[in-house]
Length: 106
Image (cartoon, rainbow, N blue to C red):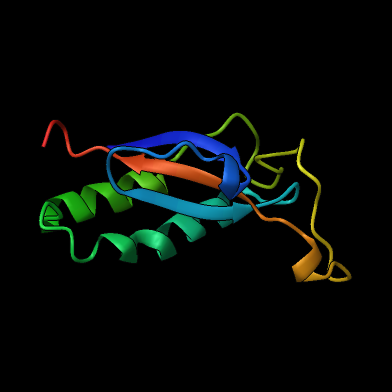
């Protein structure tokens, strides 16, 4: 149901034919932060007629069990530059992790 699509600058995201969840990430983002961002972005699906209570619960469960190839306290995207509190938001482009939602042929 949840498909990892890409981690890139928004200008380079090629799109997806279904709903997309998007989370800003950097070189310090952990799996817990990625999961929290995905859960927060679920609101983009609130008015999708395909989102039944069962699918909502399944998607939340899939986010909660999302696995990556690093420990829980290690960065998911270590190749990205980490943000710091000194960075000026206007001068820093956000890399986003994009996940597509597949409703199984609907």
